[in-house]
Structures are given as C-alpha cells and as structure tokens.
Amino acid sequence: MKQKHLKAIRLFLSIFFLVALASIFLDFRESISTPWVHRIHSLQFIPSVINFTVIASASAAGFLIVLVLTLLFGRVYCSTLCPLGTLQDVFSWLSRKFSIKKRFKYTLPRNIIRYGFLILSLVSLIFGSLVTLYLLDPYSNFGRIFSDLGRPVVISLNNLLAGQFEKLNWFFLYKFDYRGFEWKEALFPMVMLAVVLWLSLLHGRLFCNTVCPVGTFLGLVSRTSLFRIKMDKVSCTQCGKCSVVCKSSCIDIKKMEIDASRCVDCYNCLKVCPSVSVSYRMALEKKNPEKTESSKRAFLSKSVVFILALTGITRRTTAQVGRGDALIPVQKNHPVSPPGSVSLAHFNRNCTACHLCVTACPSQVLQPSFLEYGFAGILQPHLDFSVGFCEYECTKCGAVCPTGAILPMTLEDKKLTQMGKVNLILRNCIVYTDETSCGSCAEHCPTQAVRMVPYKEGLTIPEIHPSTCIGCGACEHVCPAKPNKAIYVDGNPVHEVAREPEFEKMEEFKSEEFPF
Image 1: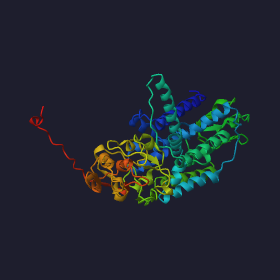
Image 2 (image 1 turned 180 degrees about the horizontal axis):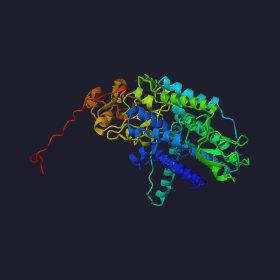
Image 3 (image 1 turned 90 degrees about the horizontal axis):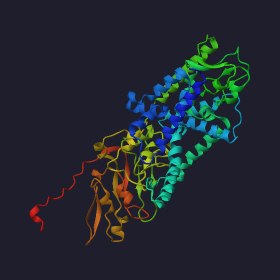
Image 4 (image 1 turned 90 degrees about the vertical axis):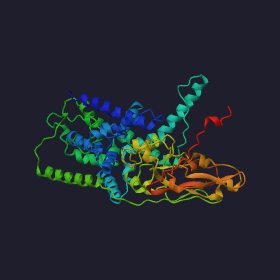
C-alpha cells in the first residue's frame, strides 16, 4: 500500500464515525437499534474508561483498544475515532472553501495550558467529581452540541417540511412535538461550539493539543508509539510544504523534526512531500541518555495519569429545587436521577453528560440539568417532570448509556425501582381549593400509589401510598394546579425497591347477568 493512500483511509473512517455518531444524537424517530449504538460508542475513550470501572467487563474495555492503537500507530483515535476532531476538520475544510483559512506554521507546544487542563481534570477526579473531565471531554461535547443544538434544528426543519407536505397530501413525514430546549442548558454547548469553530478555523487542531485532556493523555502515550511520521534529514529539502498543511502545527522544518505528542496522524504531510522525505515508519532509533530519561519521564507520566483516570471517589450529592412562591411552594430535597442510575452519587460520579440518554428518551422527560445536582453535576441529565414523565414500559436510557452511569435493567426490575417518592400538598389541590373534580394524578399513576378517596358529596380527593411509588412523575406532570403543584416527586438519593402494587381485578360478568 502506498503511504499516500493512508490519508484516504483515514478520511473514510473519520467520516464514517462522524456520520454514525451524529445520526445517533440527531435520531428523534428511534430508528437506530441499541446494539448498533453500543458498537459505535464502545471506542470512545472517556465513556469506555468510566464504563469499565463500573461494570469491569471486557465489553467495556474499548479504551484498551484505543491505548493499544495509540502505542502502535500514534494518535489515530484523534484523527479517525473522535467525532469532535473530525468536526474540526470539517470546519477547517469549509474555511478553505470560503478563503478564511490561513496557512499553518510551526508553533511551540503550549505545555502549560494542555498539561494544566489535564492536571485540573485529574484533581477533579481525585476529589470524586467528573465535572471538569466531562466539560472538556471531546465525545461529551460533541454529544451536547448535536443533542442540545443540532437536534432542535433538525426537528424544526422536519416539522416545517411536514407541514408543507401535508398541503400536498404527502404524509411520509410527520410532526414531532419537541419540548426540550432550554437556553440555560444550551448555553455551554453554544460556547464550546464557538470555541471549537474559532480554533479550528484559525489554528487547526489547537483544541486537541491545548484544551482536550484525552488528546493530551494520548499525546503522552504516542511519544513511545511503534509507528510514527518521521522526516529523513538527508533527503529533506526543507521546502516547508509539509509544515504548511500540518493542522497540528507540530512540524519544525528548520530542525526537520515532528512533535509526536501533538501529531494527530492526519497524514496530510505524506501527500504533499515532493521528495518523499516524510514517511510513516517504525520509530526504531538508537537511544541516547537524553532520550532515555525523556522516555522514563513519559512512561511515569502515562502510568500516573492512567491509574488516576481509573480512580473514582464517592461523593454525596444533594440539591434544593424551589417551585414558586404562591400558596404552598413545593420543596424538593433531591433531584430524580434516571432509572438504573442506582444512586445520585453513582450517577454523578460516572455520567459525562453526553446527553445520549436525552436523545433516546421517548417522553423527553430526561433533560440536561442546570444546578439541580449542584455545580459538580452541571448538564448531567435529570428527570424534568414539567416536560414529561418516565414511561412505565421503557428502559431505553440504560440500554444506550455508554459509561455505565445508567445501568441496563429488565423491564420487571425497572417497574419496581423507586427513583423517588410521591408527596402531596393537599391545600394546593384544585379539589380542595376550587371544590371541582379532578383525579388526573390517580388516572396516570401506573402503580396505584395515588388513589382517589371520598372527600365531599360528589367529590373525591387524592390519597398517596409512597411505598408503591416508583417516582415516574406522571402525577406531577399532569397535575393542573398552578403556580405550584399539589403532587410532586422528591428523588431518592439511593434508589430503593418499591412494594409491588396490588392491582384491583375487574369482576367477571356471567352471561346470564346480561339482559340481551
């Protein structure tokens, strides 16, 4: 195989992963199967590491494949598997089409910045929080950009076209009721998109080599990779063509050296070198004392980083949420985390806020949080009952979660998992305040945790049974009381097992009882 073909192979793989992952996050018709989702996400580095620490299964060891690939071939993860990296390449390509892009040139590594972000992420991990890591993680940022920003655009376009096609009696598109967009939760993805766009337009892969902790860590590993892009100092004419197309700005044409820790293996340089002085080959050279010490330091650094990356420390998480000030306000002590998340501590410790579960949730009740979990859990999904409620027959969030923050569970287990407990403020109920019949909460409760009991002549009023409540929030979602709900769900810090409901059986009618 000619080395110039390496770029074509890289382009094919990077576009494949970009399109596949974008399709998953933009899919609002649930047309992509869960096994396919798992296969595509298994090679994303940070989610795979976290998932492995949770379930310790070979199926969750995709990050080990990435490490092996990096040790063998360099930062191929950054050039082919990382969707945010490919998105930056798309921005750079578009900039050239509009004559925005200036030529690349060699720059010194910004070690203080990139290692500073890596150390900050590790310190966050040591103190039991993923917040710094998932705010910088390329996969999670890609997911938030496409789920929180791209998906509303796609749905709006779908609804616009569906409305126009209905006028022509074409019904192959149908409108989708989207209720999830909130500017507070979308603000961070907007800022990150702007940063990535700006850096990629002007500086290529600067984000990958300064901000991204995954890129920095894999850069340390790639210093000792078996195959690397090397320059032949004898045949090189120092024409500078390779440096001009290097999106990582890591080719020092004066010294005829390539910074392996910043090279993302895009193979642009292989295609443009007229003297074939730049080649992709085994990096076997005689070691001198300086290189030996450098390798030792790199090995120690990688070992420490890898060990710390697998470290998770449990932390307690609480959040207070107010719901208005008229009549009697709702007082929630804890947010409600998704079914299968085990506890707030487990969820906050392992969720990278990629929002794949938000995309997969059919009722849209899973929404990005703002400060419901506190700052350490910002943007992590929570059950927002003002938008919807957790469907009784659904386990999709656990089926698609790539990190193990939401563990997969059977439908039978889900129906007895108590995410929270129902609470009733009787003086907010419209039956009490307006003396009008209602019963919406009881009608929507799937476990008979809310029942209607006699109140006044011709009226019934809610009565709650928290032991059978699973915290689905159906009662809170449909409650018509304003501005404060009469019934609401307060989250359980640790999920419990609800008592199995005893459904009333309908009496069987005998045929002779019918008058006809």
